[in-house]
Amino acid sequence: MTSLVCTLQHHQDDVNWCAFSAKLLATCSGDKTLRIYNTNNFSELAFSPLSGHGYGVHCCCFSACGQFLASCSTDATTVVWSMVTGEIEAVLEHPGRSPVRICALSPDSLHLVSGAADGTLALWDFPSKQLQRTGGVTETTVVACSFSPCSQMFMSGSTYGDLRLWDLNMNQLVAEKNAHDLGVSCCTFAPNIFSGGQVVQFQLASCGQDSLLKIWTINKFSSGGCKMQLLHTLTGQSAPVLSCAYSSDGQLLVSGSVDKSVTIYDANNGRLLYTLTQHERYVTACSFSPTSQLLATGSMDKTVNIWKLSDGCSGHKESTQTSNEGRTSAGRSKLLVSDWSEDDVSQWLAEEGLGGLVDTFKANNIDGTELLGLTKETLASELHIESVGVRNKILRKVEELKSDSVCSGTPDEFLCPITRELMREPVIAADGYSYEREAIESWINTKNRSSPMTNLPLLTTLLTPNHTLKMAIGRWKTSQ
Image (cartoon, rainbow, N blue to C red; front, side, top):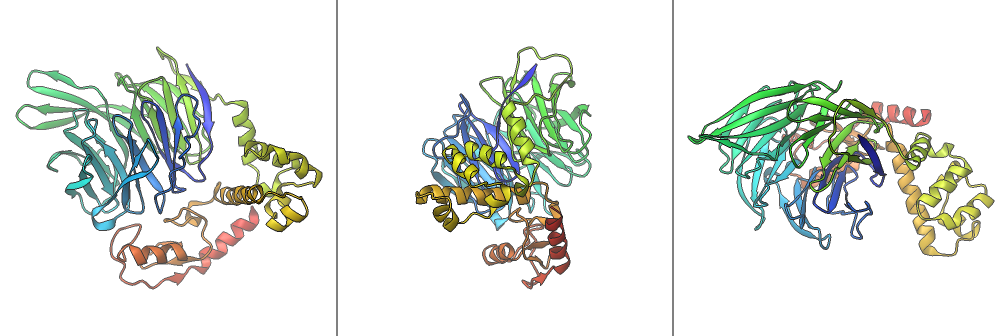
């Protein structure tokens, strides 16, 4: 059986990835941060959140010993962090300065590969943090990558739907050009190596926009050749599958989907064991702990769920467990902050460590509308909160609420592709996409006039106000 251990609700935007080490859990988000938790009790480490990226963080991965964490971002960098101090160890700038969508560390921690929006792959020597080689496929975006358990090969997947196997010299060993119709979302090697005679065999899972999860066998022959064959096609989800991961023993395979579900399979025969339906939006990330029966799943609902799996999972069961705390927070989160009651505000204060102010807020009848209108002056003169630090904390938390309220359920076309925030001054760039004016101007000034979406050169830096989109956003905000 499975049970929900806890729900982590600290990110302010979509959770894009989660990764376990032996003792830590790392999560990353469109809010530009990474958060690090102790897996004993899922308390956040003192140096968390990590805030070194300029744009949303797409992926993160631990070194084998757990001493380092690598993360990649739309800001065209892969950052290496110390998990002892939380400090940045290195900033690896991707060749061509293209947004980096995926990064992966080899099991022996000697190599790191990063894949970008322009189709390039960069292979780095991890101990020295030096670029070794580049390769890839043009006119596509690399969105998936995984090293083989022997650390001598890695698989990449792209939005064109192809899977390509590479050696450490960037020689292409296998190309499965139609692995997933409409694009690959994720791929991951199983941890097991099967050896017999002149053949070494690996297994790989991949998922994509075709709503399928596939299991492949890869045979590497002593002659140097490789062969890739489809073993299972799993159809347990009804919408694009965005993420997949093997358990540390290779016996279980998990996937997350646009249909908001998490599915767990027997990796040996492809049999569906569990379907988890706790998340309220797309499930974008999933990861098994290497040292315990824990599973983490991340979502566009900005949460990370931690699940406990029992030994000997069998049978297909639905699981929708949720803690009382999770239900309470979820119920309130469905309301606009302006619709909160005084009790909702009191509960929010308690959750934010401001429980000592509950009586003061209740005495002044502070509901959601009043909360959003608070200023330093009203906190000091009307609510008589003398501490400058407490006043600043309240206002900071209120600003987070405003941002969270705006982004929750916002139509994707109203969000700037760079910042993933609701646009105030949308403009159309030469690539035909709309961006927040300040964000695209900053991008053009620092990214050599390339398009954030296509990575092709912008023929002009002229920006045209998108009045139609601005009016649509205004109407949507009014309707909320």
